[in-house]
Amino acid sequence: MATSVPGRVREACAWVAPRARSVRIEPDLIEPYAAGLRGVEDPATPDPATDLPGADREARIALVVCLDAINFGSGWWPTIRKRPGHSGYFTIAAGVTERFRAHGAWPVGELEQLAAAEVAEATGQDPEHPLMADYATALRDVGERVRRDHGGSFEALVEAAGGSAVALADLLAGWDAFADASAYDDRPIPFYKRAQIAAADLNRAGLAELRDEERLTAFADNLVPHVLRVDGVLRLEPALEARIDAGKLLTHGSAEEVELRACAVHAVELLAEAIGRRLCPAEIDAILWNRGRDQRYKSRPRPRSRNTAY
Image 1 (cartoon, helix red, strand yellow):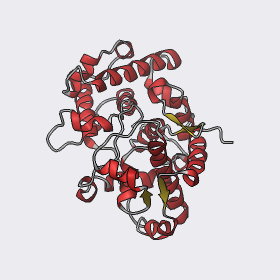
Image 2 (spheres, rainbow, N blue to C red; image 1 turned 90 degrees about the vertical axis):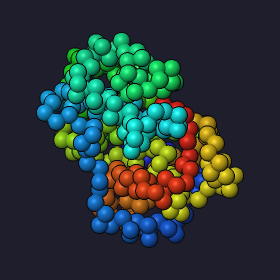
Image 3 (tube, one colour; image 1 turned 30 degrees about the horizontal axis):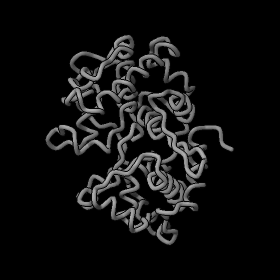
Image 4 (cartoon, helix red, strand yellow; image 1 turned 180 degrees about the horizontal axis):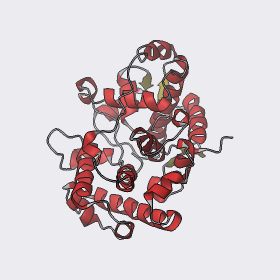
């Protein structure tokens, strides 16, 4: 049994995939689909809209950790006030980034006391929207953990990982703010999407030198399963497909929702193997996530579930 977060995620998703009842991976499509990924550049570079040019390393790390702690809410995106030309995620991320640019990073002590109204003000949202309370809860946990375990320093948090993306994901997975596990047929199924993507984001932003990003898994959300479904790599049972196409919410932790996330993670592992790991799962994830922003994918309803995981 694996003990690291990526190892546990990989094992659990490989266990779910052949048992899934509503989602299946099309094995005959893995090789040709993987061939189409060869030569595609990993686009997972830091977005200028969510960076702090000129800020010190402490503030830039704080921004990445805070953004990834609240990198959830996709089930709520149709209900928030989106900025023109912005997705739900980038609407929230841009608001937090602008708050950092205008006032600096939230001091750890302020983070520990953060209220929903303050998050709403930063992101331009209704303070009564349920996401605002969820975001404030996650950010308060970040403040408490950084103060209690790392002397109030985000740089010290990164240094505690000892240069390992896996170690950093393991560390963050122990925080309530990054908790992300479900169950399937009575077996715990860890996903830890945001703990792993935080490690990747810090590495790609040049804020940490993490030697083993290739050991991370795909980041289990709802967009990568959607892309793989549209492209035929994932096949859904007709009743589930009809529910998604009708825009009906999936229940977080339900068998169908777990299967979608787990089968997508496992499919990405198979794709990585098919190209000899010339692209690692995290890089394939980034390619598919960015592909999902094209109109071909945006024109079809994606699976949505309201939760604090993704």
